[in-house]
Amino acid sequence: MPDPGLSPLQSSLPSGVAGFAARVLADAAAHGLAGAPAVPTEKPTEVPAAAPAAEPVAEAAAEPVAGSAAPAVAIPPRPDLGRILGGPTGLGTAALSLVPRAEPPAAPLGPPADALIIPGLYYHPVPEPDPVRVDEVSLRIKSWAVDEVRLFPDDWEGQFDGFSVGRYMVACHPDAPTVEHLMVATRLMVAENAVDDCYCEDHGGSPIGLGGRLLLAHTALDPLHSTGEYQPHWAESLHADAPRRAYRSAMDYFVRQATPSQADRFRHDMARLHMGYLAEAAWAQTDHVPEVWEYLVMRQFNNFRPCPTITDTVGGYELPADLHAQPGMQRVLALAGNASTIVNDLYSYTKELAAPGRHMNLPVVLADRESLSEKDAYLKAVEVHNDLMRDFEAASAELAAACPVPSVLRFLRGVAVWVDGNHYWHQTNTYRYSLPDFW
Ligand SMILES: CC(C)=CCC/C(C)=C(\C)COP(=O)(O)OP(=O)(O)O
Ligand SMILES: [Mg+2]
Image 1: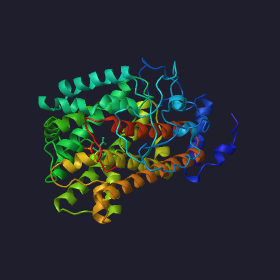
Image 2: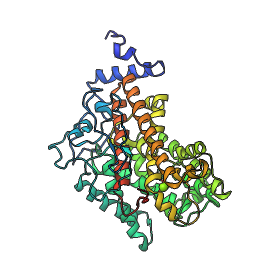
Image 3: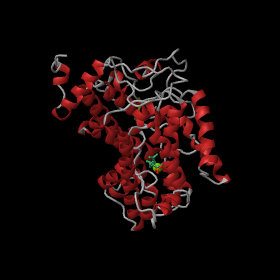
Image 4: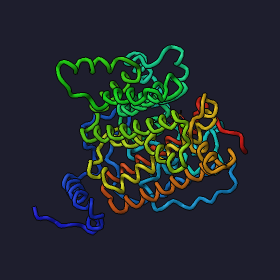
């Protein structure tokens, strides 16, 4: 077959990705595909799978919401994101429609009546996550936690349930073709929180000795390859405590769903996360309050990033490694993780103030380093979050325009939806979070 040469679209790609993207596009065209799954997936049972639409920009995105009690906050319209970054949006759920929907959702968008409202916060509301899926994921994850990995003692059951991880993951991954795809994300989310709680934080964690604990736990994700004499000791160690049992099992399920390069991507993100935990712990040990920018560096690593970056595995397709590695995508992922993590700093502020010792979060560091009142520091942290969100959206739009490969567009949309679902979970988890009464 003659080489058709580069299309105008292909030739507009940035130089680093043009060749690879051109191959992907040509390959997709040759197979009549638009972002089709690159990994074998079980046959969807609950939601009909469909190749996502390839059109880069078409529909209006969800209107952003600034917390209702805010002094008016001017929210500039989002850049030209359209279908790519629309996220779940009621009428705009079509913008999310990586899978077809039988009926439009009945409920109007907007936070539930008892949701936590942060004045001036820029976010996108999502539709209520599918309650059938939430119930099913909640049942399956409890059974995994109790029967497969013996995750928690009986008296932590209320906290496990209150975490509402089923609702969290269904909100963040509305395009998962089956419940089992959702379970891949849900087990990892639970395991990641078990390591954080039990090794670093308030369920027996401590900065002292954290490096050794984290390194050994990391091998549940990135296995030891050693001699016949020592290998069995290591294998045995993966069953020694709940965090390692959870990591080992969750990773085992994940690698069966993921391609090797997706698994490697995840390991890299988890190494980043563990490095962030270690910096936070080192500063706690010496009672050091970092500069604001230093805190933001730490929080870019101690960060939700490992969660949105598996959106393609959970969605049953693959963003090819070269497209994931391109600088534009790395910027999008860093900004998405940072905005999502500062959301946590805002919603967990009172929980962390009430915890023993000084727990750092962005408002606390701003108050200390910039000599602000608690309220002014909190409001400045809201502004920092909003800037990160806007930069994330601008970077996504730029990349979508520069590299409109179907899997890139679907991945960008999946990351944006994850960011919105993460916000939704924080805003509605009144079991876990509450707000300060500054206003
Ligand atoms: C799920 C995952 C990768 C978590 C990594 C780190 C983490 C637990 C967060 C980014 C959440 O922050 P934090 O530890 O402050 O959580 P809570 O405020 O206790 O909910
Ligand atoms: Mg927090």
